Structure formats: structure tokens, C-alpha cells
Amino acid sequence: MTPEEILSYPPTVLSEEQRTFYFDNGYLLLEKIVPDDWVERLRAATADMIEESRAITRSDAKWDLEDGHTAAAPRLRRLSSPNDHHPAYWDYASRSLVADIVADLVGPNVKFHHSKLNFKWARGGEEVKWHQDIQFWPHTNYSPCTVGTYIYDCGPDQGPLGIIPGSHKGELYDQYDDDGEWIGCLRPDDEAGLDAGKAVYLDGPAGSLTIHNCRTLHGSKPNRSDEGRPLLLNVYAGADAFTYTHNPLKSKYDQAIVRGAPARWAHHDPRPCLLPPDWSGGYSSIFAVQQGEDRTAAE
Image (cartoon, rainbow, N blue to C red):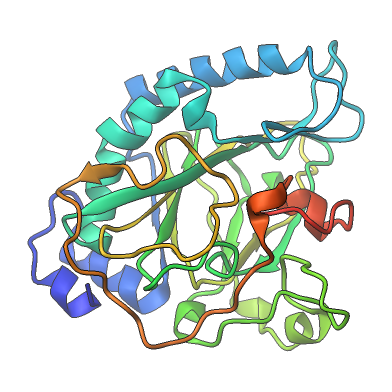
């Protein structure tokens, strides 16, 4: 669906002003919109998963560990596909107001794509360099969006999500280096050309949502504070958006319809999209690839 078609449907959660802001700027910050009972369920699930991670000694398809991780003192970068590993996460992704909010932005028929929980651990949680999402997992159109949920308060020193407003209307960048290796971020010369002074950092209290379009330039700084910054990320798309590459974080819920009905027609945006490497052979995480640890890693 086009933005005009989406806006022809009355919203269920968002205001018309918020929807228009999203289409104009490529992002939204909704402060403390998630009810406290959901936040508590997500915190409990996350505590369970951190406890499980104590038995993990090396990164794998599920866990991405930060240097210094031990059973006594876990240090995590990411839990991949959390919806597959604890029922509270999928309940939240599919049954909470989050999917209703997404329907206000992509149309009444919404499908799920993938999820991840980026921990941004205290005192050193790594940066995420400027990048765009859609080159990691191209779709037939640009409706996909990522919804981040702050499980705990996130202040400006904790590495909140940074956005360059309006960048979703600009070009898609080449996220390979000069040698043809996937780097999962902008090349140094492209990054140097950004007006970083326009960046907006989306910190907020627990229960706040960050939403950004798949074309929007975004990243985050390291966490130098004494508090972690777990950010639960769920990716959705309009039901008329279809993938044409392997899902790098394949979930058992991939393509599940969470609102409305399946599409009978695919919508094709005429703007081209960069293709990623073939993820079917395995991957790790955006942290690993951007830090040069694993050139086969996925987003």
C-alpha cells in the first residue's frame, strides 16, 4: 500500500499527526505507551534468558556474546529471535498494542518478519554504526518497519537509538566495502558526507517505543553508563510486502499475519534495492560484521 492508501484507513492507536510525522520523517518515538504489565512480563522473560546465558561460552546462532562474558558476570550483545525462545516475547509481538500501532503505519494487514533483543551492556556496550535495514532483508516494497521497546529506562548516555530524520526519502547506500565484502554499514566516505548534526537520539523511559522505517538511516553510540540498555526489536511489514532473499534471522513466526488478513496481491515499489550476501549458509549479528569479526554475519 502507498502512504496515501494507508492514511485512508482510520487509525486505531496513533493520531493523524503522528502518522503524518512518521511518513514525513521516517520514525516515531512514543514515550511510555506500553502498559506496565507488559513491561513487567518482558523484564521477567529477559531475566530468564540472561540466566540461561550463563551456561553459554561462545557466540552461536542464538546468542551473541560480548568480550568478557562469564557465567558469574554475563555480558551479552544480542539474543536472536527472542520470540522463538520465550512465549512472553511472542505474546507481546502479536497480541499487544504494538501490532495495532504498526497497522496504523503499514495498513490494516500486517505480517511479522523477525525479532532480536540488543542488550547494549553497561560500561562498553558496542556502537551500531550508521546503516539502513532494508539492504539486509529486501522486500518488494518499503513498508517494513522496526519497533523497538525499551524494557528499562534509556537515557542519553546509554546508547539510545539515533535517527537521521527524512533519510528514508533519500538514497539507499551501498553497504559493501571497496573489495566487495559486506560491512553492514555505510562506507567511510558516505558516512563522512552525512550531516550528523541532524541526528535525533530517541531516549525514553521504560515502556517507550521507537519506530523507524526500513530505509531510515540509524545507529547508536556505545553505552558508557553503569546501566544496561536492553532494546527489544520486532520487525513487521505490510502483508503485501514479500521477501525475495533469505531471512537472516529466520523465525518460526516468519510471515505470520498478526493483524488483518494475508494479501492477495503483492505491492512492488519501483525503487531498486541493494541485495545482501546469501544468508542461507549462516550468520551471527550486525555487531560482529560491523566490528570486522565475521564477514558472513547478518543484521
